[in-house]
Amino acid sequence: MSARLLLAATVCVLGLGAQPADLILRNGKIVTLERDTPVAQAIAVRGDRIAAVGSNSQIERMAGPATKIVDLKGRLAIPGFIEGHGHFAGLGQFRMNLSLREARSWDEIVAIVQRAVQRAKSGDWIIGRGWHQSKWTRTPEPNVQGFPVHAALSKVSPQNPVLLSHASGHAAFANAAALQAAGIHRNTADPNGGTILKDPAGEPTGALIERAQGPLRAAHGQWQAKRSAADRAADERRALELAVDECLANGITSFQDAGSSFATVDRMKEMAERGDLKMRLWVMLRASNTELAQNLERYRTIGAAGHHLTVRAIKRSIDGALGPRGAWLLEPYSDLPPGAPAPAGLNTEDPADIRQTAELAIRHGYQLCVHAIGDRANREVLDLFEAAFRANPDRRNLRWRIEHAQHIHPNDIPRFGKLGVIASMQGIHCTSDAPYVRERLGPRRAAEGAYVWQKLMKSGAVVINGTDAPVEDVSPIASFYASVSRRLKDGSVFYPNERMSREEALRSYTIQTAHAAFEEDLKGALKPGKLADIVVLSRDILTAPEDEILSTGVIYTVVGGKIRYENLALR
Image (cartoon, rainbow, N blue to C red; front, side):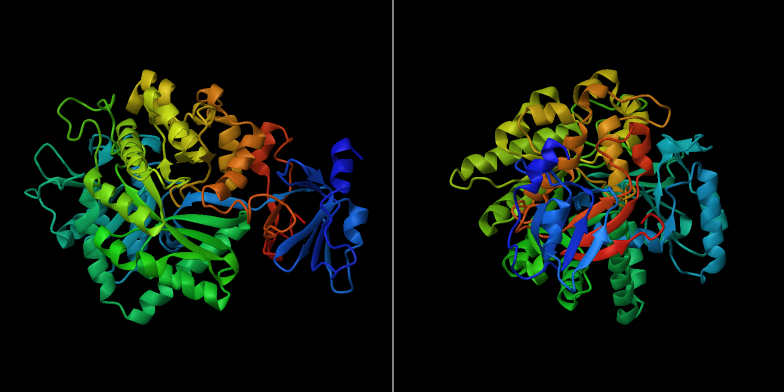
């Protein structure tokens, strides 16, 4: 036995001779992320809490007649993954609609929609998500700024309105029927914070950027409202159930939901109270300031239903995404022709309005989480946070967050650490976006401030990880791999000096993500007294050759001491 295992075998055994354990995982490599006991062989669970970690012989003494004992066969067990930023209901809805994530051309997408139309009733809306024009193998013809025009889509779906969300969620594409339903035509002006992309003749192409999506989504909502309340409720429940299944299969025991309505939170609460929410949710509310002021006190929830539901954060968005050129930049995009609308991206929500949200957050004890991708957006949010902190010197350790923090001016990187602002980032976005980052930003800006994990950590900032699902696949393994490799599909490495070490990447998905939600005393490490949230993997992602990480599978997902997912093929 190694010196580290000997150390682990001599400490952290609680209650020997007390009530037997309910679950024992033995004969594994237990990485606890605790300094005193970094590695152990076995772990015991009593109720929903970790009772002890130690050697096989020590932990086996806690077994009783009813104890479930699982032989890990040397496999790696780690704290359950915590998804640091995703869209929980959206993850389930993605599985219920057309998936466009793997499409590699506009023609493929048109064909997918055509097949869906053949199965649909006339007038029904066709909904899909996941397309990304910068990831197609060829630029569609005709196009405007790389986006297709709706003619082919309208031809295959003349009677069915079509709404296809960009992978980022920050743009959508509509056919003629959907544009008509939304009241969008050649004379429709761009809204504040949005762009209706038009062709040289002034006709809408079908591409709607950022807040220009509003009328389209409102029209779809009006169609949905004609369905029965029972059918709509069933779809909402089904989406949440599918999201739970997807997360558990990926080793995710907790999910930080990046913005849900009060109605969606009500559904989550119903599931939690029935015992159907078999994982843990930490939720940001997404609503207007008027609605927030009326409801924040009533909805603030900490650890409901056995720590399965917490609602203590607010989500706002100050800009869009880099893919559809909606990220708000200090300088214009490098790959836009002269005269293009919004050359430096879009400010999607009024900073003055977000300042009012900040006041509400402070008053009611909520964390404020603001989506900011571009360097101008990040600077504006840091300024806003700094002013709020200065105005409330008695309020400390607020743990406010910038969601994404993808492109930061070098002058603003140290401010994260100085202000204590959490950088909620997604490792997989780096390698997914990298093929077009240099085009959008130019080499100087990309090198100085794109996905600067190491620079942020050296500033003293807490960096957490996730996937932004369903923007990307919810797999923590894929995002962990991107974090430690920054390797693209062509084999190149995107600014390798910013790679995380494997321990840094694991911490960014566990204990640091717990810290970002004020939950580090409950989860994120395998320590007696903490919640028994554990994942067992088929490979040791901390030591395996880099090129083998992506083939790692989840064998067991344990939430509160209960095995919620088991992969029999890998076991």
